[in-house]
Length: 466
Image (tube, rainbow, N blue to C red; front, side):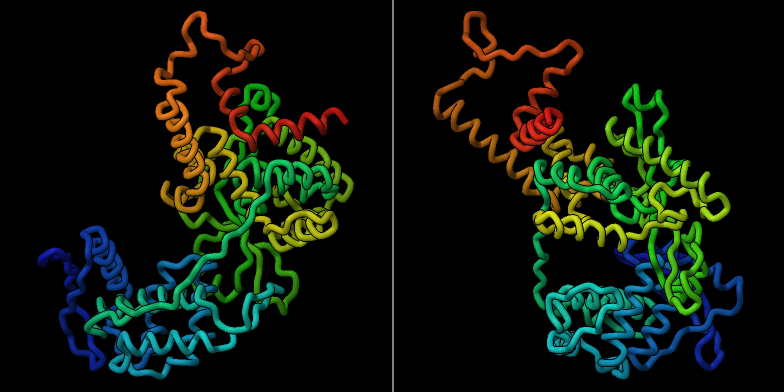
């Protein structure tokens, strides 16, 4: 059994285990919060029930990393994270510094290692993705640093190291690339030009529902509400509760199928990866998103065409209840959608963006349309925290703040409107707009005040006149 004792500002988990010589000894592990300590206590008690606890002993970094992946990674990491982290360790850490003794590793050692990485040729991608440079980039080094810092933190808790050498290590500066997004006019033009039913639906769902591509390709009909009643009363929706990912068969085996809902048949016995439906990485990713009437009607037509294909193919159709599929019902992977999307851009000379940018376009316009209601947008996008929305889309909020400053300049310092209610007084001439009955005048005013949304509506009106 394990116990918890508070010591200063930390919480210690105390338990008995066997050392490398089989002798019984007491171990103390320190944690910053009581919740962490309680979680560790449960882990220890669970492992004790399976057999005697043995203190891991490591002298080299590789030995420590093996213990770290086995004891920590398999418990904490999701499938894709397990794959990514193991690739980083096997490609860049173990071959270069795996033989280093733990006693040799300090902050200076790690900083020298990071500088050597900048001059190391990157391991070629399995997927046909073009790299910005042939050498290891600062983004990859930052990921390696986070991984090592976590590993050394566990080593300190396991009393293998006295301190974490990665805490104060300087990492090569990383500057995230700014990705462009489409404006309303370009997005409408692209959807008009698209003649691929799957791609057209994917683009509209990504934009209207702020979906990630893995959420989009994992969508099943039981999570789609497009009944006539729902469409009529404005409650048509999609429920996001899973993701489609391609992961290695080894990761599934190592993690014993953790988080996997369904594994699709492998394309070939020689293929080392397989597509799976899995639970989302975070709880906030599970969400209900209401969709516009037009997108709901697209889904209705898509369902009718899919049902016709099922009837035509009979037993040859693989029915997994997926919304986006190949002609024979197999999952339509993210790579296939990205390829078709890039072809659409190239063939029609559209501004080059990545498919994920449609999600950014979606969040951008939702922020603009609803007057900057960040919490409502967060509910649609599935970001774990509000500050993730504000960090990524701060330029939208900054634009609104600039408008506030301009309004203050004109109204107060320009003495044009010292009393905001002045224009509502009887006898004051105003420009009026007749609003049709049943339309929310305040909402309409917000839309028309936004130049991007005005452009969107104008473009839609022009297309309807053709």
